Image 1 (spheres, helix red, strand yellow):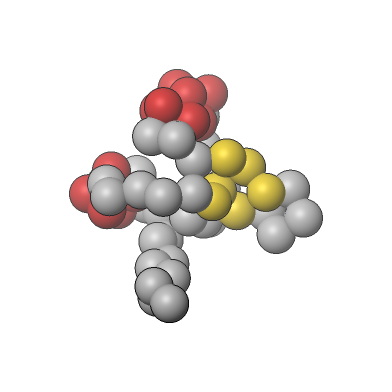
Image 2: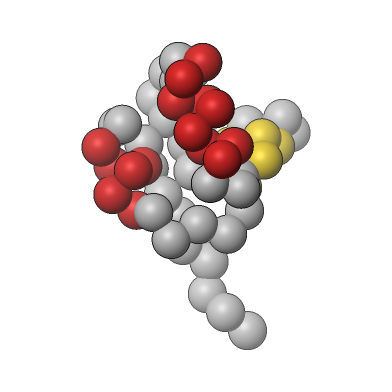
Length: 52
């Protein structure tokens, strides 16, 4: 999950509550999440990875 700008503290808190973690190397939030509405409602982009 990425955002065009750094999300507010409140949004980052909600992202962590969804179980995602910040990857500073890739500069994106990563983890398993089923909340696509949350991401899009805050201007984010979600990249879905295919299951093996």
